[in-house]
Length: 369
Ligand SMILES: *Cc1c(COP(=O)(O)O)cnc(C)c1O
Image (tube, rainbow, N blue to C red; front, side, top):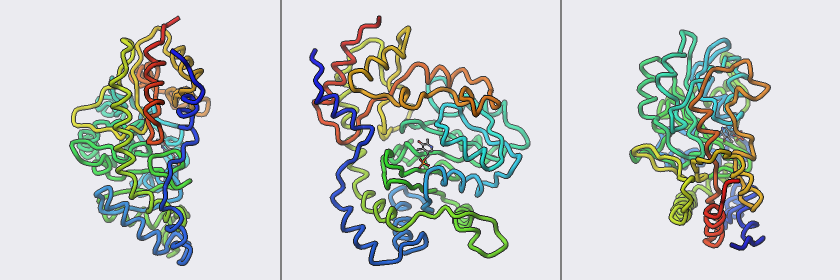
């Protein structure tokens, strides 16, 4: 096996990956002829295009994925002192908006082989102060959002989905967003739909949509309603609208890349993370389950050969293990086991077959120390 730098470089661009979007310039030029604020026609048109692409009744464009969570939490009725249930296997980005809202994050465990919240853990930890449950399908792999929606309804909680990784992931042929009361997306540079910074909220509930819109616009400045400014400006909205046209094709390429790579994997201690029944991931990142005595050594081995891992990049661990969050510690053994026995592989649309073959070859050649 030869390790060539050019292959390694192809893979490493996952970190600063910029796909080519030929339509950006005309779209930006057109937007520059109109108004540029967050209430401009360009933003309204982007919201319509988002709602159409995702089969949602309403889309509210906001300035980031974090803003989308803050807006959704407010719209869901989360107020200071309330509990918000969520799994600890998500990024810090999901829990900080909960704390900023003055709410208490209550960590619930995941199921054994999925990042979805475990219904038994939810039932066990839900209290009268609980207002919302956030579920976070990581790296685009669907979670059991259908049964979580039923559970949330029965417990009178709002189900908020953090779909920052999951544009285009489906369950039983429906976008994951259709299962949440409110679904939050990021369009940060690194996400499957990218506008530099940005985000949006989807909902099928007109009243929740109105509360999202009002809260993200200073309560419409009517003096009765509270709000902050979380609007998305017209230029990133114009980018988002033109790039949305390429999203389906990009996700198809991610899926094809994942298939190509998986067909070549031969290592007995490495397999794709299980996909739940009826789920179709967008392959934001390919997830592998690892079965080594020292899984970190495998991740380091790949990293040293130019194949990066989100687990290493973000130091992924149960959130209550980070110093800022130790006070929220609750036992979540399944979530810990999931994170400790996995890694991510880039399969983004800019990767060529040689790079995918190289990754498979490096993995197949691994011998645990
Ligand atoms: C990126 C991300 C966010 C935050 O999105 P920003 O646009 O960076 O604010 C929230 N949740 C998850 C799961 C993310 O990956």
